[in-house]
Image (cartoon, rainbow, N blue to C red; front, side, top):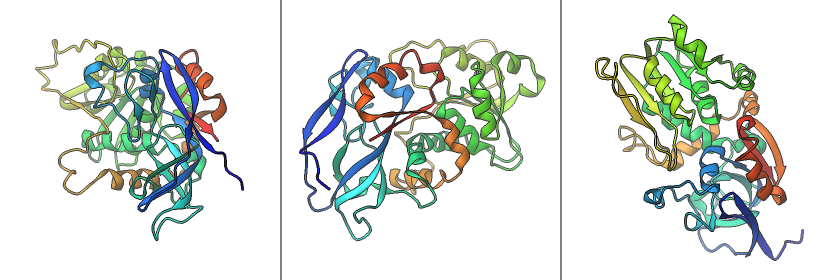
Length: 333
């Protein structure tokens, strides 16, 4: 099969603008792989903030993605969901044709260290493996929440990460998990994952939804954080999964926040919780995330599919008029 003489990569070039750029093909050196992409996906929350130039200057270094090129705000090659196959290079356990996941920007072909490409289990189709980065974030949030059997738990915000976190939490014996979201389209998706769903209005008045043991907030909206704090019981933990970019977020730390001795804990996938860090590294966590994607029910989280050649227009659409309807949007190559 003949190969093109250049790679194609997606770059954010201005507020709400992007383009495909040609880049010279690279050949792998010792300890490297060349990967041909089959699918990538848009991480709508973070990538929308990057696409609109909403990364605050104080976070330019903290928000750099692996293999990012350029600097914030733009031009920048950004993204961290890539599924493909090994074309060349490698090690004894990396052979041509092997399917791998990599935290790499949207690009048709690329070269990375062998350690950056994690094999995809046979039980996980490539089309679903694009959920791996979101699953990794959900795992980290569950670790931060420290749930136990029988806990009453709410997840405020039915985006991909919130739904995946709820899906993980419901497997703990005796837990009762509810997903809270104002978008009625999310009820069917929650149901496909075996999750209960209620509106914020219903959750605010139902006695069974009060005094919860754990609340995870993943809506990306300040109103969701307000409700998360309101639903938490005495000595409960609220895990903040949302990242707001440069948006100022008022937190209601008056009223009963102190008398209930609540814990408000941020969760960010860039750091492994300290009690696990001595034993876990990022590769082990990503390998776990991939292994958890064998359930076909998770396909409900993929709400769109477009060609890589259309990505500049698709990114503008998914970050704008279609944002409320989008969960994971897959890109095929």
